[in-house]
Length: 292
Image (cartoon, rainbow, N blue to C red; front, side, top):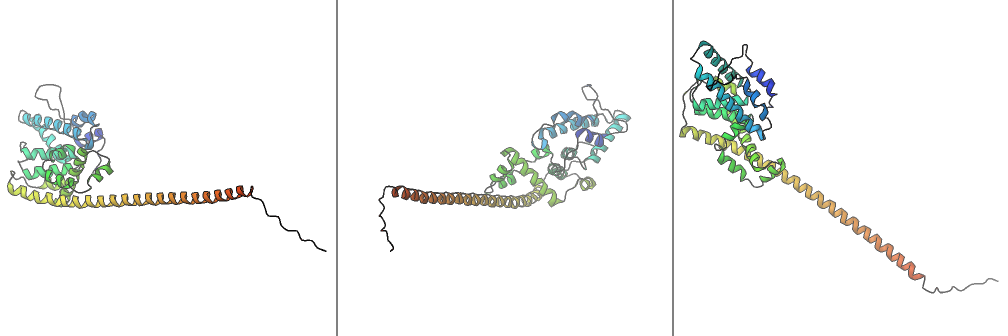
């Protein structure tokens, strides 16, 4: 999973404009620009695994900014230019930014903006790609989509050993499973942001045929992860067995050493007792021999 850059640096790289555009919100409060999105969310960087809460806040701020710009785009030439600039930044920087990939998924699910048409397949692909790149909000949205596959993985014999080895609780382990399923889907489908951007705009609603296609892909991704998990469990079992054998051998050596020490002590005590009893035993005198 690619590491995120410092959020301030990321903001400058992804949303720096020659003349920073400003969007007024609907309540006529302080002016807000798209550059404020990641700055506003810096305080949330203490979020838990995969920064789920942080990623959700980023999405909410992005939606607020883009919805505001979209609503005002026809009011003036400046508003129109501002909206075009924001969409350009979104569709350009989503190539590397998982938060923007997550928002692209939302845009295609709703089909509400000028740059896209409702397309359920693109919604799934963008969201899966964002989840594979570690976006916690995308992963949380995909939990029900992958629920059958998650249950299959959790039913593997000895699967709890992996969670214990990773030292994470059940809720976070499910996120790990989701992340791995997304990784496998990306590999199977050869997903990339660049190719998704190049795809023509086509209106496509959710359908039974489309979901059957994804059911097959999910099953394939699940089988890949199942095989990986079973291999991991087998390795852990071998390690446990090796540790048990080592402990057993060490224990046997200690017992043998104690037995040897005990035998030496017994023999030493026997000699001591023999010497002690000799002190109270009358010695038979030897007959002297005289020479002439």
